[in-house]
Image 1: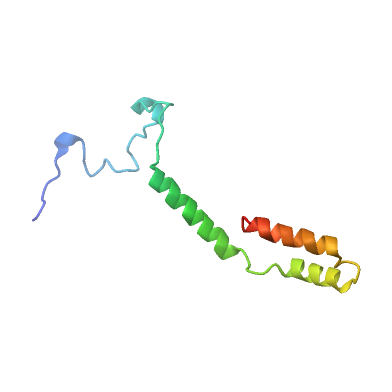
Image 2: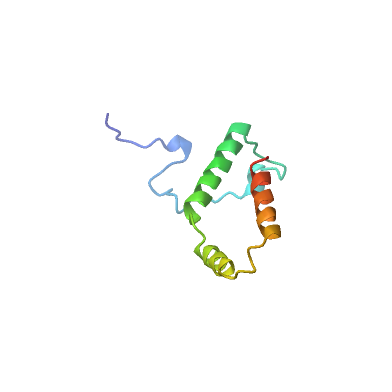
Length: 98
């Protein structure tokens, strides 16, 4: 298909380029302040999953500073006493819902 002539009835001429076009602001086109978008539950769930995946990728598997701190505490013979062992066991059990 070959176009030989521009349709000047719609206001497009070779001199009427995008640089010369009149800019339209939001007020002149009638955009209201109350416009909003809504997302489906599926879209919200997908966005949350994406966010959690990104956080999981960026979080190290082992917090080495915490491990080093606990290793130092365990070296102290007074640190491991029956009360601390019972408290730790209770915390583990409650973490698993038992």
